Amino acid sequence: MTTSPAASASAVLDHIEPGTHVIVPLANGEPVSLLDALQEHADGLDRVTVHQMHGLYDRPFLHGANRGRLDYRAYFLSHVTRKAFHEGGCDLVPCHFSEVPQLLEGLTGPKIVLAAASPIDRHGCFSLGTNADYVAAFIGRVPFFLEANAQMPRTFGRNQLHVSQVAGWVEVDRPLIEVPPPDINDLDDRIAAQVAERMPDGATVQVGIGSIPNAILGRLGDHRDLGLHTELLSDGVIPLVESGVLNGTRKRRRPTKLVATFALGTRGLYDFMDENTIVDMLPVDWVNDPRVIGQDDCFVSVNATTEIDFLGQAASETIGGRYYSGSGGQTDFARGAQYSRNGQGFIVLHSTTNDGTKSRISAQLPPGSVVTTLKNTIDNVVTEWGVAELRGRSLRERAAALIRVAHPDFRDQLSREARELGYL
Image (cartoon, rainbow, N blue to C red; front, side):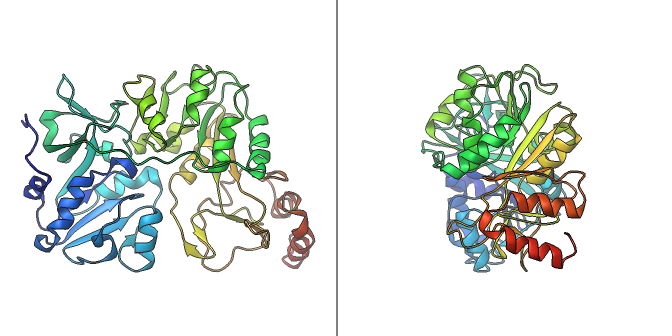
């Protein structure tokens, strides 16, 4: 049983064998000092691989500087790992967020989780704070080495470890990365208004990240008895909780709780989470499991895409045929909403690119585009021009509905293309 913190982060090296798979949480769950120690001693490592989604700290090993000694595999690209991937420095693993624990469990060789955590409490417990994600699924099954950060909120759910379960830990006092809510423009608000008016009282809600999802949260102030079951907890939920709109009283799974698997936002969000018993941080293989999501009635899923074709295929992880992010949990929640009684799935996007020169609704996706949400899973597509209801519709009906919500400047061209393809 470990009873006191290690003298330095380099103590983690005692737990790294040749061929070790190092599993690291995403975003603020990353233990900065421990990864710095791995980088500092990379030349002494042998076939060690770091596995992570959405890393926010840049280091040479992400770019292949220590290939064969310390490598990096991304499961979702961030602004940091995107550059490293396109340079050829690291690998990207296609996956649904819900399935990451299963993929990591299947790795051959020794495993260890390195994670940031709240300080140890009077009961001898740590909390993974802003995170549960895929690492919480390994509590009690894989050794954990923690970085206890004085600025990490203490949260509840299934993201806690007793000191007896920890191989070692160090103490730091480091600010968390903050991501302020994005600015909302008129197009975002027009899309948000159409989604909000279709969301019934008592619905359980999932919203992704970005300006449109944030605008939707801002439009829900007149709703009643909403519940939250989402992968990402963001600042936009706080006013809805404080006003009583988000109370979760009609949820069947984890009623009255705000269910999430990670959080990313401002210090105000992290303070809101701290010792807040209504926040339930749970492993992603439960939170994002479509079979779990579908058990709540009136589940509403909202996610953004970058482009969609006449079939209803949403390309949400590439831009111009070039990888930008990853699948994340978009398909997990779109499928879950399908399974929910009276559930609804919304895919949202601006009708054109930012410069207005290209329609984001196209006859066919361009070469290199990666389909994230399948045509069979798509329900509603929303632009600033309206809502295209695609579920159960024929190919001809889909093309016509999508053309109606395309930008007026491109509707004639899209109609010609639809006729050439035999859709109209």
